[in-house]
Length: 68
Image 1 (tube, rainbow, N blue to C red):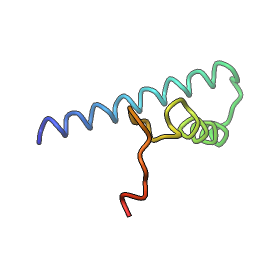
Image 2 (spheres, rainbow, N blue to C red):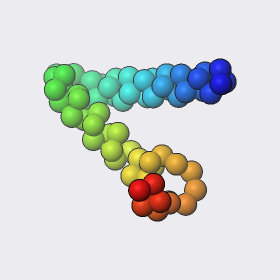
Image 3 (spheres, rainbow, N blue to C red):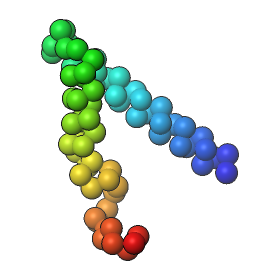
């Protein structure tokens, strides 16, 4: 179980790093961007980045109804 916890923690750290890099790029493009606009852009990025529309999974898209 420790290995699973360590893996999950690493995934969370990678996500945080990616978000910080995204914010850095936003601020480079627009130095006057405010925190509210940053949050809006992060939300868009999380929904629209490549793979996000299918849950970031590898392989074929499954039928979500199997979980009902």
